[in-house]
Image (cartoon, rainbow, N blue to C red):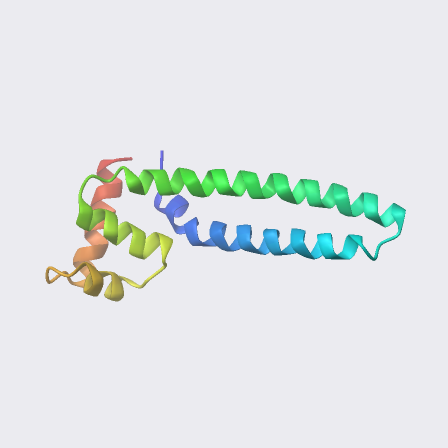
Length: 117
C-alpha cells in the first residue's frame, strides 16, 4: 500500500542515497591515510553505509514502481513531476498542460491515491 507520505519521501530518499554514497567515497579516500585500527572501523562503517544505500534504493524503487503502474499518462506525469521532482502544483499543472489548474492537478493525484489505496 502506498500513501501520500510514502510518495512525498521519494525525493528525500534520493538525496539520502546521494549523501551516503558521497560519505562512502570520502571513507575510501581516508583509508589510505588511516592507521590499521582506524582502517578496520572505516571498513565496518562503509559496509553499514552500503547496506543502508541498498535499503534506500529498494524503498525508492518501490515508490517508482507504484508510479510506473499508473495507466493514465497525464496522471503518471503529474505524479512524477510532483513526487519525484518536487515541483509545486502550479508548475505541475503548467507542464502537464490541457488547461489544468494547480487545484485540478492536485485533485487528480489525490483522487488517484484515494481510489488505489
